[in-house]
Amino acid sequence: MDNKNYRLETLAIHAGQVPDPTTQARAVPVYRTTAYAFKSSQHGADLFALRESGNIYARLMNPTEDVLEQRLAALEGGKAAVAVSSGTAAIYFTITNIARQGDEIVAANNLYGGTFTQFDAILPQQGIKVNFAPVNDFSAVEAAINERTRAIYIETVGNPALDIADIEGYAEIAQKYHLPLVVDSTFTPPTLLRPIEHGANIVIHSLSKWIGGHGTAIGGAVIDAGNFDWSDPKFVLYNEPDRGYHGLRFARDLGDGNAIAFALRFRTVALRNQGPTLAPDAAWIFLQGLESLPLRTAQHSANGLAVAEFLKNHPKVAWVKYPGFDPLAKKYLPNGANGMVVFGVKGGAAEAQKLVDNVELFTIIANVGDAKSLIIHPASTTHSQLSEEDQLKSGLTPELIRLSIGLEHKDDIINALDEALKLI
Ligand SMILES: Cc1ncc(COP(=O)(O)O)c(C=O)c1O
Image (cartoon, rainbow, N blue to C red; front, side, top):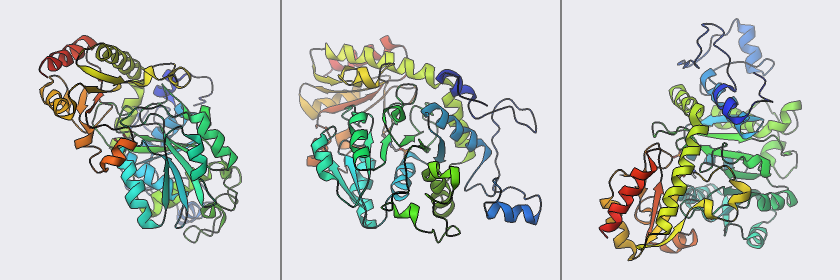
């Protein structure tokens, strides 16, 4: 399908798919297979030697996932995508697809707790150091860059403080030092924000959130914008012959493929040799989610804004943060700011936990991006691995309550919060 002239609503339903050529099935079939038959031993040899492209083994590729990958690339305005088993795997293998022992990354300090722990505690065990800089503090970002830096990493909207990253400011620095800008856009699906339009080189999603949209599967994806030149020798993984792949130099030997060297290396190294494969059934769930994504993000945004306005005016609420209230929203989120709202109640952490325990309709849960409204006290749960100091640095105060506003009627959501606020 030629995607070029279609709008996002149309791409969300059609990109990457035509009716199944064998059966004429209209929906995307789930290809539950471990491997694919070679037509002959020569065909098998050609596929293995990259003389011909095609399916070999489902750890690396699957037709259901292929539709998901093409659709995500089209929606984000990227050139290629790779789907993986979780958002966490997408992040980890993105970093190790760029940096190796001795290299460094510069990251914003307001990241999802699991990502912060991966960067702060896991990557250093493998010799990759991450230097954190306060979000949007561009002099601190530049000060953290040195000759070993190999990427800049940010989230479009930080979790849980919900600050909007000034992507274009980061992109300018990334270009100045010739570093790829990696953007986790989980909180802002492409119907709300397309980081590549603002200068991102790699976009990451946890598909487990709004893209799946119903809290039914775990998955992740990386989208390669195809706009980064990996032939700079400092990216050793792209310029030295790869012992694991026929001595290939990913930034030099792929012809037109050099532009999407990141995605090709991700598939042929991370998926092939490290194995974070997405199951085709999960890929199907995410495709189902994508079809209604434009409608859902519009509704999540309308409900999120209504809840944020309600809380802002409530006498028992000390403060409210909603990305839609951020001055950067005009530039980055003109079509809606999604359904995440955080707030503090007067009376601190004890009153916050009381509210969480008493609110009806909401589920206390360590997740976001479900059709159902969700609530959590991050300091004692999702971000409890962080020291109090690191929590405060990432904008997480002890009384902060995080809401992921779902698709229920906004008046029912607001009434539930109003009743719970009466009890504190
Ligand atoms: C912003 C962000 N990125 C990545 C992840 C990790 O995704 P997954 O749970 O699919 O591994 C999460 C999970 O909450 C997240 O909020």
